[in-house]
Length: 317
Image (cartoon, rainbow, N blue to C red; front, top):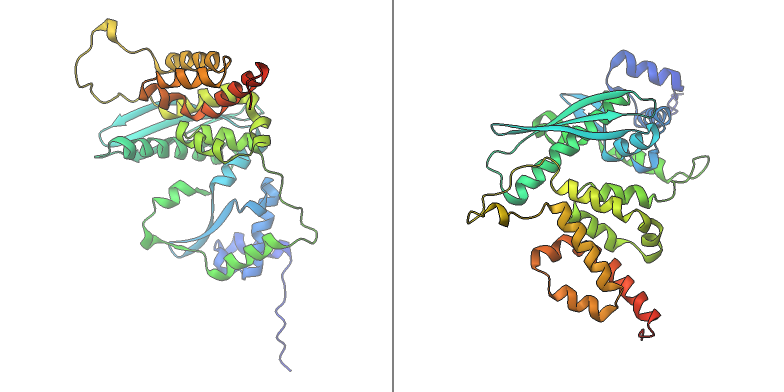
């Protein structure tokens, strides 16, 4: 009598199939899930966050690394990153990033994007993409992985790639829902999320800050100076030249460096807040729009300081 039972191969057999055939599509959906789990386990990645994804590229199924993989690898291996240089060559913007892990090893890589015809927000987004691509490429490199990065997958023409089959994705979802012997997902790392948001600039950090509850904000408030500095650097990571001014200005009229302006505004805002809500509101109305935008992300902090000052002066409602 024919049997409907499909034999299940052991972990070693699955790895052998991958090595000898070089194509994950040769594995059954269940075996791909097992392989996926073993890869995550070998790297210390949390499979519940889906750090890797399957992709059919040029007829062969492979794994590529998502943003979660790079973030977790940096934390696991103590990897720090440094933007070394930038170069605009014609229509191409190249970012050079150096990585160092906790053992002192270093590695370098590049991120290249086209900025042809881009201005304003589109140019800023392309700049951030180049920085992100370089950071993730060097992270995967120093961690010893040859996976494609998510930003590289986006650049592959659609005709050359195809998303993983639905059965594999469904099995991964089912795996993530298993409770049994699997460990529950880790607690949310608010500090890591805040640092990541700051790396994408003031606007991104402001949106992230507004999404947090008061206890979550209080847990990372001591790192605000770090977030401010990172956000400012992210908004102008490469020191690209500003758009030409409408009118020439004299040397005496040259604006103060953005970082100095921010420090001065931050100091004045806190001084006004220490006098209470009324004084803070009055001071805020005197700001130019550009100055207000520079510190707008931190207004909730100033307002909190003002409320505390009101309470101390017996003015709280």
